[in-house]
Length: 236
Image (cartoon, rainbow, N blue to C red):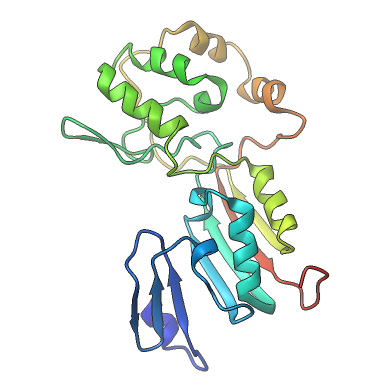
């Protein structure tokens, strides 16, 4: 990607911001191994920000959006595609969990039924999973879902609010509702009472009762947005 962008006509500089990477610099491509809000980006220096599968990992979403806005030139654009977000059916974003040679990843080996991460408390989730999995693995799953800082656990509406607070104009928004992989649940349904109660009701109705009226969109799992820094703004 970086080499492709660097070869575009009139391209002056390409900066990658990735807290999991090491700082480096080569020709017109620079890598900054820090979160965007700590990257020290030059104010107003960028015409375009591109982000893929990162917004759901930004711990302080508003501060990150402010940093992106400040780095953009007036009239500059943000294109971002990210998910699954916390409020979606697979928003637990299970990842980085390994046990006895098994790697649990939400798109490949996912034992968590849709929306249960929202409707169950951590203790209930653990009790449900212990019907089929070893206690050590259950502990890892529960930590990943509810406590690990790998994801920010922000709802659909939180992203829209963060964009507004940062002074970024929402140009377009596309939401993906389809879960495009097969879930691998245990043989037979979970029998935990809290889970069986969930099966007996419309999940969206239960979610609206628990989180409404502030949060209403529980179908969207991926978000694709185009944002723009206004050419003039009171926040400039």
